[in-house]
Image (cartoon, rainbow over all chains, first blue to last red; front, side, top):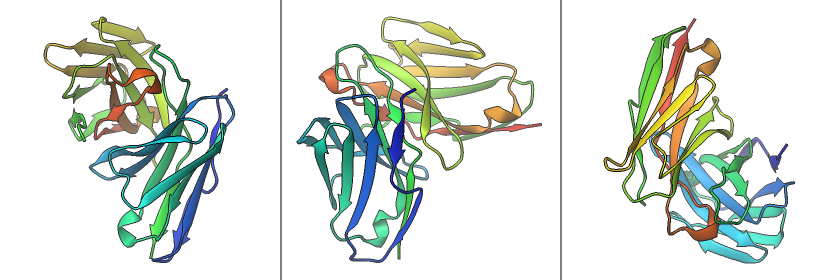
Length: 114
Length: 114
């Protein structure tokens, strides 16, 4: 079974703090994604990565950065957390390739910025 | 971003009834996928339908795709209380290459009353 894990289920941080969200997958997938989920807005793509050290901006990258030093690990970084970054953050992974693949999701991290 | 939209936003039915959820998307697609999310958890893949398919079945799930109308529907037959969850459609752009990026809809919240 593919397993995608996220470092925390719940996280509370203060405005201005630097926040790291970690995601690890164990299926040797090339592609990894970070989404945020807000009520009424569905899932919005923040960043994705298709290989180690490779990254591309998604639809809402402002205020976020990412790091992919190892194939299995994809980190989302909030350089200076703000209250409007309070949200559910979801990580996903999928193989690289032309065949259509499903995305495998982690359990999510609910981040509250106060 | 070009997100899909789902209809209805919320649906409440009795156990044993059928539930139908609709999804519209904006661009041409390679495939369309449906995901389920239990409250506060990650998403789980349910079913994938390719752009050259019109209908697909998996257990109690039936998905249809009408590319001329840019729409899809998910039917859950003989619903159970355990089907209570949010359901999301996600479309894959044919120009997304091997990254398997998806564009998610805003979701339908299904409540099945016992």
